[in-house]
Image (cartoon, rainbow, N blue to C red; front, side):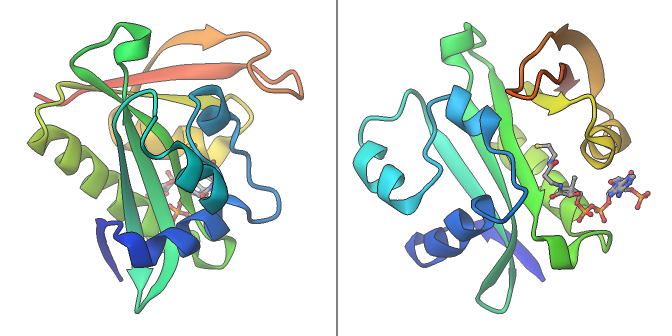
Length: 160
Ligand SMILES: CC(C)(COP(=O)(O)OP(=O)(O)OC[C@H]1O[C@@H](n2cnc3c(N)ncnc32)[C@H](O)[C@@H]1OP(=O)(O)O)[C@@H](O)C(=O)NCCC(=O)NCCS
């Protein structure tokens, strides 16, 4: 397994991963980011801010991905949002999410980002634990952020 920045060949697999049954793409939608390949083709020249996609690949198969984007629209110039980080259901609990998180934080640092932020449902135990494991701290709660009425936790980590 290796993690790298997505190239055009990886995009179909990336959007396939986003469309897996049970996937929640609320964060991406709320940020105005594409959630289908068609959506991406239409929006790519007119995105609200920059977008970097990292993929975890097993051969040519996309088994995980992380979506990193700018936070200028939230008036956070030197921050980046981990808008989504996921692993395909058949490859979870074997370190792929951690590898993606490591690569995402390195990538952000390399691009001069000093603070990474993320929003995770308070019901998402795996997601909450993953962010905590990597030293993210909760700094707020967004009430009823998700359609199902779940609250979201704001997480942040300083990268310096
Ligand atoms: C969260 C997610 C990315 C973790 O991916 P993964 O490949 O299983 O993660 P790893 O195997 O590297 O595990 C990393 C840590 O995450 C936590 N974790 C992962 N799955 C967990 C679970 N089912 N229950 C509790 N903690 C879990 C643990 O802290 C784990 O560390 P440990 O192995 O030292 O205990 C994966 O469950 C997923 O894709 N979920 C759906 C999308 C999502 O919720 N993303 C997070 C919000 S953007």
